[in-house]
Amino acid sequence: MRRWWRYLRTVIAVTATAAIAITALAVALLAYPQPLFAHSMTHGQLELWSDVPFDEGHAKRVLDDAVERINTSPLPLDGATHRVFITNTEWRRRLFFLPNWQAGGINHYLARNVFIGRADIPNNRLSGDHGLVLPPRTLAYFIAHEIGHSLVGGRIGLVGNKLLPTWIGEGVPDYIGFGGDVDIDELTRALVDDKPEMNPAKSGLYARYRLLVAFMLKQEGWSIDRLLTSGLPLGEAEAILRKQMGARPAT
Ligand SMILES: [Zn+2]
Image (tube, rainbow, N blue to C red; front, side, top):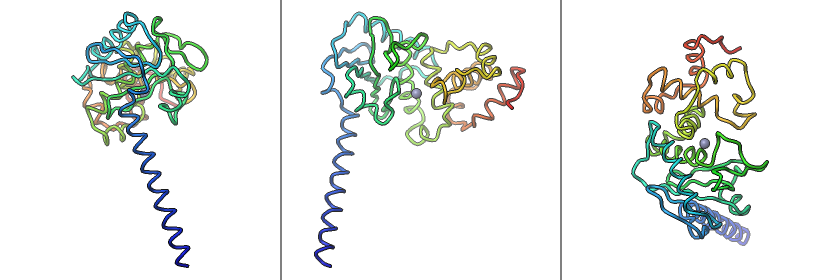
């Protein structure tokens, strides 16, 4: 019995130590991934890191585009350095995007690090699993969207960020990614007509959430802080939109 107990204690201790070590390694990797990205440049408040060489002139144009989108939003750059890591090789993408391998970008806002999938920097495009992603979701859009998550997190903190309703948590970064360029009338029509692109679960797009954020900020006159701290459920936000836009209620 004692021998069994000693054996069990050893197994528990080894397992716990291994789990702690793996977690610490993963946190260190997400916070300091630079050694795995050989090529980099600094441009204003942004750093661009890549696992393959890139032309700095092309990269500056993409970063300028992303910064313009961010700085025309209600959450401009906050003075911190934001690092963008382009993961072209498959193993890096799988490592940093775990467990969401299908995403175009991913954010670790506490370290101000964002990770973007395979990119065609000269053409300002992201390369998805089915070829280049079509505009308007350019590479600059994905970078601005992911940095938008960092800016939201910086504004309301870790807990506030975790508690955000999905439509605000994704809608605000998407609004930032689009540089606030949202056609509220057109997207409301698409919502009323139940167009596939307005279904985030099926389309993988955030147009429904982007519309609601644009509506609350631009037409209802909400401040970004009011929106981020409102906790307003999706259904209530849509009910306000449909009422104000004269659209029929959801069935
Ligand atoms: Zn997002």
